[in-house]
Length: 312
DNA sequence: GGAGAGACCTGCGAGC
DNA sequence: TGCTCGCAGGTCTCTC
Image 1: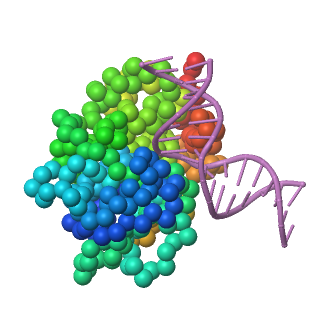
Image 2: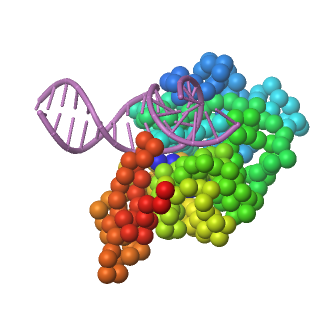
Image 3: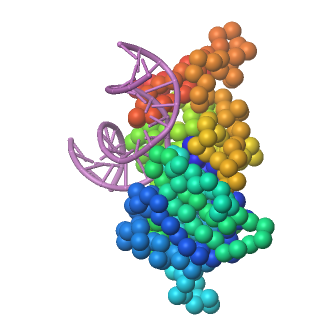
């Protein structure tokens, strides 16, 4: 499932293979994949025809390509971005036009010719939780740092609600502690809230909480500043480890733009390890086991011993 | 306004 | 063999 590391891997692929090219034709194969584009699939196709891709930008799990539309002058700032969210099963694949079209291909963009690069960008999404749409760009003082993929001084309207992501150096333990102190909710719900901290999904939330030895139901507001700093450190650590491994893949649903899977799932200590001995306390006299519990409509994995249920 | 629940969506595996 | 049901989970919408 694409979380921050997986989306960043895709962004890097798009920066390499798509930035600087022109979208010669856009074909929406399934209107449900562009339902967030308020003016409909035909408008999206017409708008993208002749547009030039200027960059590939990411914030949290949101990805966007600032584009210069065909009728915009080359010396003015672009007015819109092509937004992309991979949802649970979305893929952005750069492929040859002759390659067989995937069963779940939803949108196909024909790109201007480049001798060293395939001719199409395809949005493939089995479960249709993701999508593509156009969103106006707006100038913002909250500009993205270079590490997030761009030094753009503007972000799309539809990306404005997304908080800075875990790897953004502007996110501090002090600021996160202040934000969590206002929340009357469990720590896992808080770190999954993209308006507080973006990029964290179910898998990496469980991993970071396991590393921090925190139960997912621990009240967010109860954490000390030091514990928040420790948790933030673990979140960043697990994200960077996953990024170095090319992301996490449990099946074929997550691949990079070239169709290759990551292999960080082999390094997970909590998520998907139900019944296994906890790596933290395996060497002790009373080793804990990884439990799987339903919470908030999701599966949560924790150690029975070092992630004890918080006192009421 | 904040928090939680439910809907959306499809492929797969388990159970009958 | 074929059918039904539950599960996976990010985001949005609705309700309390």
